[in-house]
Length: 437
Image (tube, rainbow, N blue to C red):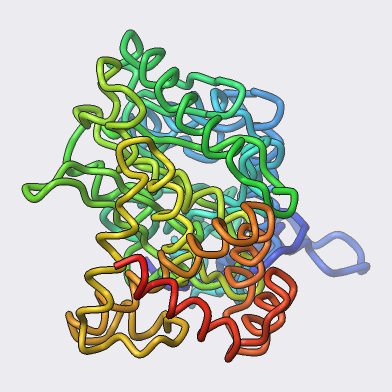
């Protein structure tokens, strides 16, 4: 059997290759004549595109039989897995969804009329209604098979967790979906009874996150939350295999209690896309007995997911402005109102503090001392603009810097928000920081 591995594909149309017809207009051959043999086995771009278009139509129509048809003969385990994925996908409120091989996959031809296989990366491109400003995509590796020159194209296997791609919750076990005005929560079907409570808690966080935003209008009205039922799935969800790193969501923010308190980890992607919030189902932040003030730590992931919607050509969701916005929001809680003074004390006693605006690269990649100083400075810049010029001006500034981190963009945003050029702002801000310490 010939095997071709192709980690690419392209859009296209067409159907399965047809057997070659007898090409002769001469009188009928004698009964003893041999029939014209079929050409070698082929898997073409059009074949793949046509099969995937059929998968898209079947998903949209809820046609389980049509969706499973290309998997005929691939074994009960593979069919069962695709049936489970189909059922999960039908639960999610997609505004758009399609299976597409979107890179240059060239036609493959065997040496003879025997079996031919081709492994092709296929993207599931989708938008969740109200959640995604632009399409997101998750990658999978499909193994296409044609058993002979005249046989239909089939799918022998789909790898999406360990083998190739960025696994989404619907690639795992049976799933439950709970919707709220500002949240779409995905959970394991076994956790259905608890999922409503988690959705209510997430709704409170999402609603307050979106309501607090006074900047430019957001292109999203809801946030997607995946309540991971195990540590393995918590780590795997939306994390791409390195080989397929370009095909994924923009950002996956994880909330997990750590030994030293809380850890919010946001994995950044390049290019515009969507944000996904991943939590552990045993996360104390989703304990309904905890009030909002005690859950402000996990709110950082909601802030980051919201700001991801503003991402354009360069997704800078981990910019210093995003980090500063998050801390400033946290300092708004009653018991944290004076916390900015602790940050001011820490930064003014740091050898790395120079009274200048922070730098994202230093904040994430500098020495421990420099990184801390720039992180504190980021928080204090945003908080100072909030206090002196108001939340609306501060949030407009944050939105501009998240969209474009270049110095010229920062300078223009600073002028629009405060009326000051960089030098004048830094002088006033640094004096306030030292006075606050």
